[in-house]
Length: 247
Ligand SMILES: NC(=O)c1ccc[n+]([C@@H]2O[C@H](COP(=O)([O-])OP(=O)(O)OC[C@H]3O[C@@H](n4cnc5c(N)ncnc54)[C@H](OP(=O)(O)O)[C@@H]3O)[C@@H](O)[C@H]2O)c1
Image (tube, rainbow, N blue to C red):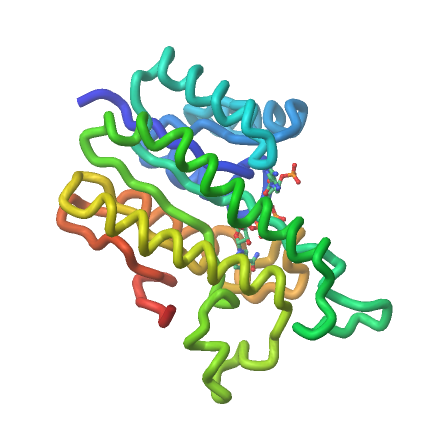
């Protein structure tokens, strides 16, 4: 069987970088999606220095031309894509006011909503649509979306949930919407050899989450597990470390 090819968006740092490392350690060739060449190349050489098979690829989630170019490059070099991990995401500081308090639903600005939804929702879907024809050429395609427990309406409606009071509307609802897309895409692709799932990585210490509770090594595990599901694995599920989360 030919070597598996995985593309991870936003893989130059954080959970994406660690996901690339863990997949590469399994013998998978990892394409490090990054929007800045210098950062992408730095990540590539960091993994190569560990003896891993990694290659930077220009991919700005907010620039459709890079999606098309990445698809063209992957098609020409590999003819297929086995694993797509939609990892890149943003959490704008505008979700907090000058006193560090969360800006509530009644006050969140259109700009914050639109900017967040552009990257976390609309443009993540555009990346997926651009690359799906290549995933369809894989013998066992796997598509993983990085959501968040903060996108769970079930948890947000439960006063006993630890995230009940963590109401940052733009980020949270962009991940809720993304989960909705995952359910629809998984339904469309049911009966094919492609599995589509959404991950909550945990509260992970990264630039996005300085107050995270677990290290990236742990935070990447859910993405890696969903990217390497066996042929009889699930599709259309919202998972954290093997446990199903409520939508
Ligand atoms: N950390 C957590 O506790 C946590 C919890 C739940 C879910 N998540 C989700 O997990 C994913 C990774 O988070 P993280 O904590 O690793 O975040 P991070 O440390 O802030 O890293 C984000 C990555 O996404 C990239 N990115 C952002 N916008 C992009 C764009 N338009 N095009 C291409 N790349 C872009 C960044 O690239 P640059 O370096 O160029 O900015 C960076 O590589 C996100 O989707 C996040 O929402 C994280």
